[in-house]
Image 1 (cartoon, rainbow, N blue to C red):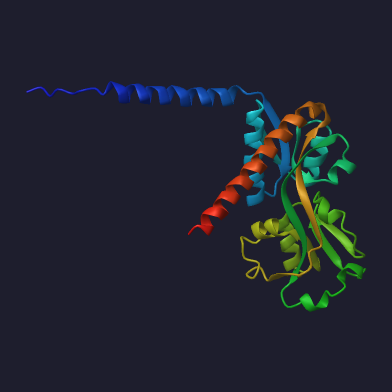
Image 2: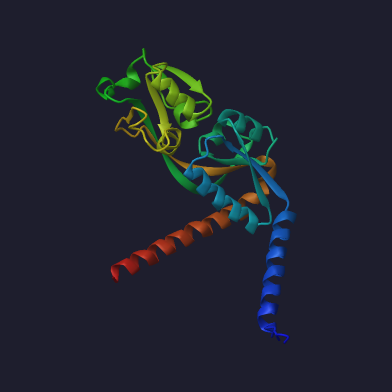
Length: 247
C-alpha cells in the first residue's frame, strides 16, 4: 500500500522565504565595499567587543569592515601612511602624533595603565617612577606606556607575552601594561605567572576609532551610528536596573 504524504505548503513557503532572505543578506554583506583597518596583534576580549561595535556601525553605513592584525607600532605607521583605511582603536593622543589619522569622537571603551612586578618585590617600588636604575618594559606602539614619564630605562618589545617573559627572566624590573592585555598574556592567572600589580592607576584613557584623512567624510555617519549604540546600551542598562528593583 502506498503511503500518502501531505505537503504543508505554508511551512514550505516560509522555509523558502527564510532561505532566500538569508542568502540575500549574505550576498549583500559580500557585495559591500570593504573598509580595511589595522589593529594590534594583542587581541583581547576588549578588542573583540570593539570589533563587533565597529562592524555593526560600518555595515549600517554601507561598508564591510576588514581587520588586519599587526605589531602595534607597525599598525600605526601603515594606517597613517594610508596603506589601510584606519586604525581599529587608539587613545586620543595618537591624533597629535599621527595627524593623518582622524578621530571618530565617540568613546568606545576605557583602559587603565598599571605597573606589574615580581610577586614578593612590590615593597621595593614605592617611588619607582623616579628611579633611574630601573629597567621598564612595555609593548612597542602602546602609546599610554610610551608617553608615561619615568626616569628609568624603557625597553620595548613586540607583544605583552614577550614582556611578561622578560619580567619573569629578570631582564626587566617592571612592566607597564593594561589589565586586559596582561590577563591575556598570562592566560588569566597573574598569580601563577608570579606577577603582582602595583595598586596605583598610572593613567586612564578613553579609546577611539581612527580613520585615515581621506575618509573624513565618513566621520559624521560613523559618529551617529556609534552614538546610537551607546544610547541603546544605556537604555538597556536602565531597563535592566528597573527590572531588578521590581523583584
